Image 1 (cartoon, rainbow, N blue to C red):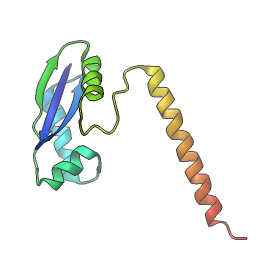
Image 2 (cartoon, helix red, strand yellow; image 1 turned 135 degrees about the horizontal axis):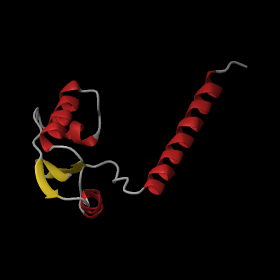
Image 3 (cartoon, one colour; image 1 turned 90 degrees about the horizontal axis):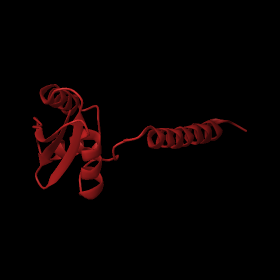
Length: 115
């Protein structure tokens, strides 16, 4: 269980994994090269012409989610979402996103109906 950083010029991305760093690095690089994700990490890497992301381990231990959470909240970074560190916070965010999706779809449906 690790916390890592990915440095892109002056910017940094903090992440964590419950598995090995090499596997996580591989998954990041697959997403970067596939061009399917427009997350800030991949967007910035493409802008800089970076084709291979390298993870730097910052912490190893059981409370890795807490460490990652603190890094994201207390530093300027590329992470678009802070860590969902407890279930209640995760569920609250999930419900908010579901409401946004529902209202967006409802608005699309209304704009597509003919009078």
